[in-house]
Length: 254
Image 1 (tube, helix red, strand yellow):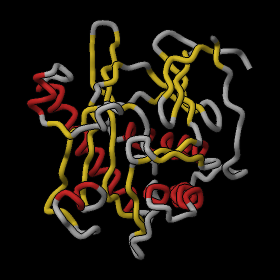
Image 2: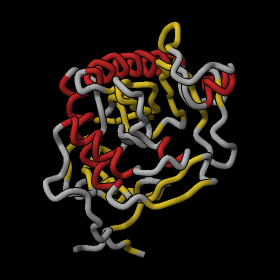
Image 3: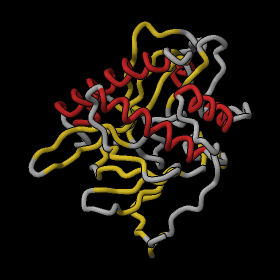
């Protein structure tokens, strides 16, 4: 395997230089973190499953007109993506009370919200990803009002499409977190969906039993995390033929 230069390493993924200018290779790790990196672990095969799940969902979103950074899957753990300028805002769309919103407003977990609620968080591990408003975002120059409008529109369209897709396979989309980036092509810029969409950043419950099939199984020590991710892949019809397996990661050029 040829040596490639590492561009960035996050909690769940590594980015390497791509084969062509304006591209990157996104490598999915098995590492798992929760509570702003306070809890750490390894879930064997998670990277393989998240790669396949995110590929599938990015393709489906692209088919309904959602622009994304995804180009194609390279292998079991890697994707070729377009290089974008990440907007440092995590966008959370909530349909049902769970996690922090249930705690903040003393709502019983599983309570449907009056309507889908969109929240913004500043991407900063050091600060604990604080919740921010549009005023913070524009005042600090993270995004313009026009970009926020585009992000909000895309987030709600993603929510509508994914809610229907998951309902069709017996799952409830409780909430999810997405990131967006600026894609520059010649002199034009557009906002595109970036990062990933997987059980790492979606809360997915079985529609009949409300069993959690996402990273909450890791956060809350519920066990069978890999099995839950595999169940999502199975329902989507994309479980790898050989099942999840550990693959040696690409070497890093110093």
